[in-house]
Length: 279
Image (tube, rainbow, N blue to C red; front, top):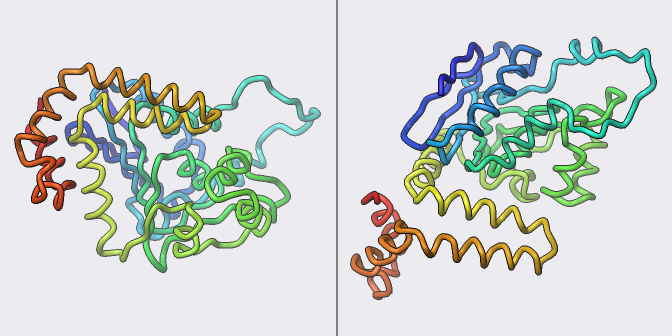
């Protein structure tokens, strides 16, 4: 994969890709940046070597400000609105980040708003900085609505009432509230976020590829009726149980102290050491 972009830098670290956004002065989602994010989503989705994608910003004050309002004013409006049977480009891009067989993580150190918030709402995990991360859906005050998936993703993340407060209020949501409501997984001091999020991404990337991918697929099945989700989970579990990776690593777990009192008191570290030994 080439990963050759002007406004995005992609650093490969084994099965982890670290994407850094840089579109000064505020990381506005201009049409050139949108085109690059679209292309990136397709390239990441097709990359068989990756299991984790971490996206961050070169500007600690802005992750992604919002979609370019000047570009929105150029959209054609001379014909009546029509309901399309197909997803538009922005929805497709967000869905690729949500459904790709990679774990997608957003490290949001500053502001994220509008279409930027809709994009990261499609990710598997989001982390922020205490006192600095701000989320804003600023569309309704401008006479429009979140049209890049926000009205659908926010209720699923934080519940309908809180989503409507964010969407209709059009005001900043602070990091502490966003964590409490479930928009952010966790928040950190500015000096701590990079170490934790990078460590988590690298840890997941060290685990068996099929286990990571099928575990995400199983969790996505929670949007189905429970009975169907349980059937899918059982099937995916049985698939993994039959892999050489699973058989080897479960034996190593026992050999290295799993199911002993000492081993189980540090089971997270024990599992990491099993994964670090490779196939």
